[in-house]
Length: 132
Ligand SMILES: [Zn+2]
Image (cartoon, rainbow, N blue to C red; front, side, top):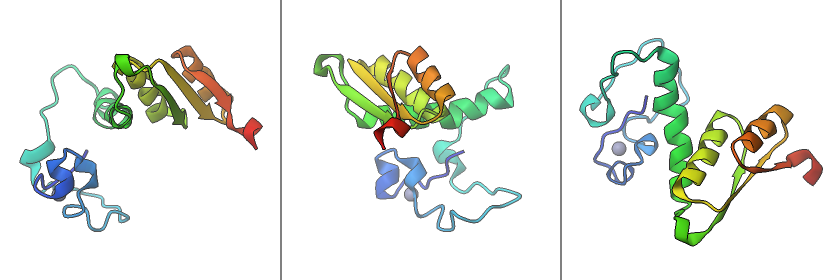
């Protein structure tokens, strides 16, 4: 879950995960969570979604999608995008790049299973270990 004041510079840009005002002690872990400014970024979870689906939709997918959006991809630009790391967020970034119109996506990782997942999603892959 992302908590944001919605009023700071990052919040006005829609970068709610970068809000320093609502998360000044980000390294600490808590057993309970109070949600200040809950009216800014929270959404009602539709019926029929389990916890794993909701976590996926509220964290992994938007993070990968946001990374792809920062690349300013359009079909007309015919961009080649490199994605370092092919874990869940990396795979979502790869898929988002293609959805936005990237011409090529090059996926870089060192874990064979992750590279295989990236390849299955259409990326060209590079084993990071062979670059050293
Ligand atoms: Zn803020």
